[in-house]
Image (cartoon, rainbow, N blue to C red):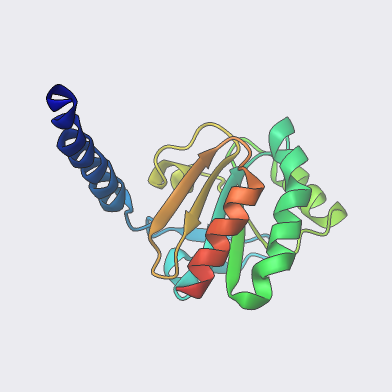
Length: 164
């Protein structure tokens, strides 16, 4: 029994260390300028005070196309409560394809085209799609998803962040 007792403080220290490390890993989102399909501009700081999802995607990405109806449903469910979203099309995605996709699917959220790749670079050199970042109201990155998010987990996290 005595041999096992030393494991409890060690386990607690490890748990505290993991919690502390994860807490410190929440960093501010990069200050980016998003060029939207209507040629208007939004900066990362314009989303201050809102829980914001930044989704890097491409029209050629099967997973991106498949998750888009869930992204639309999430936006529609939480937008009135202070939730915002910007879908950032990758630099290799032809702008005409992005415009067509957004129009034919009536995407209700902001859609940007990263024609130079600068936004993807600033957000951690995003190359895999979909890659999604969830920001809290202060503009801190709370969660990063590579691949389709677990939408039940995402919704729970959005609800928690909307309350803070």
